[in-house]
Image (cartoon, rainbow, N blue to C red; front, side):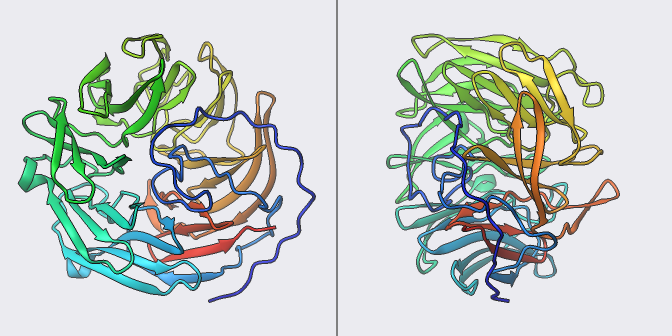
Length: 435
């Protein structure tokens, strides 16, 4: 299917949006989405000339290509789309490369793997594209580096064989972080190998850090505090800050997270860092002016996912400004908190639903948000301290995975080339969102 999408649009309004602190890590082309979180790894869509409203019903596709099961979100770089899936009948995971213009599969790399994880529908990690290479990690810890253009295998690791990793309950998830010549990766290995830095070109180990062998599910997060570059590793027993040059611990806040559910990416605003967990709730950390010490400023009062006072996110990363926090709580409540105190200001289910583990992804764009909920809707909405204002809604993809008696899609879309690229367990699609 290669139909062109046509939208009714309004003249753009002046953007008045608070910006995240820019990170001094790998920056890619502005119209690509080459890794988890996009070009700046912050889940912000910065392209101009994007539609103000969506047509009702199913969004018209530029193309649709059949794929297998999986939770892996797509990455888009240099006119290509990279995604992972699982072909259960053959006992294989696959890495796929598609032409972003037409949706044709250009190359693929299947490999045998036996699953021993819960929710075994396929790989979880968003591929990472950098300087002509693409990096992937399968649900069971099979890590590959390919030539992005032709799929040539350049190097590989197996976390279970190479580092004696005990794969966590829901599989290996975290997308690595590129920093200079390094690929900083959550491994969960023995002998101080929770985090390992590899030479991104050769796969040679450069350094390893942290004793903990429970990897959790949160990606390494680049931050700068007090002028000090650091990588935040949120794992099931602590929030640890590492010097990316050699893995030295700069500061650490102990935090035992129930069921190892450290998933949403930490959010930095100025000297503060916000985190949220499904069972344990939220907490705000403040880093000292030297960038090498930290304290908890406030935290939620509830350790129950049902009786929540703040924000208990299961998967989606919240949006945080210096004054307010917007995120999806444990039973689908889209909430706004006061960033200074953690006090809840409002909640709504207008964009979401009511059910345990209900999920929706928030993607800031100029003065509004694109919200992709687990029912496959794409919503344009304004979020402010005054409340939720829905501007437009359409169907992006069908929910295909049954969870808690409802059908869901839990894969984060990519926003690139003035389009949205999204997948479920049956297809990957491109929808044009250009004005």
